[in-house]
Image (cartoon, rainbow, N blue to C red):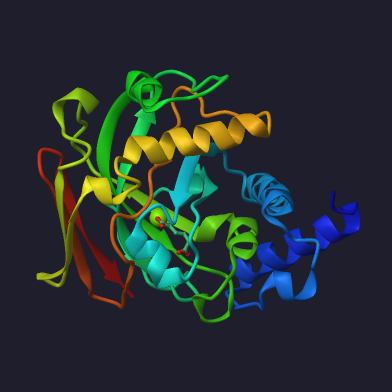
Length: 263
Ligand code: OOG
Ligand code: MG
């Protein structure tokens, strides 16, 4: 259990770091009581504060560190999850400015949009597939609030798993019409391939990542609900960006899209 004043303090540090765009020291260096479980409590408190003060609403979930590529990149070997808010969504037609980020990175994702709640007692991969309205190509912009994008698992969880923005494609796809293991993905920066992979890079099947999170949420008395978006985690390492950089993702059978950064 976290003391209320310690919870408020950590929430405030993370909230202000994002708002003021300043990097902070790892919270675990200062707060030994920050564990995986208490970090999720900080995340809830942080997201609630953002929802209140930014006048936005809860829109879904994101998984983090679900691929070996990402785990190796960050030196963290377990997945995490975070919460998405409506004001984190960027429409494909809108310009994406580089200005609001501390040291943002962009990565390819597969998003699930749910038509049913993911209820317990245990959520399986089949349950996730049955509860999915459609899947859609996505990109996520992550932006750790920690110095040098460096953290431990409790740190990143408290920081809402580095959530910053997300972009959904246009072509909705029935989950039964694609192969969630072998579906290929090509991620390019300025026309050059950064990485190629398949959907299986996300825990063998991205629906498994969603099931993993759904089960974690149930242990905290929470759940994924109908209508919510779930980003299943980057398939490859994240890329840094600057003004005028263009990124594209293409998935086999799932289409894709391009984004370009502006000043
Ligand atoms: C944590 C969030 C990772 C993903 O898709 O793996 C993430 C981080 O690397 O900062 O969003
Ligand atoms: Mg991600």
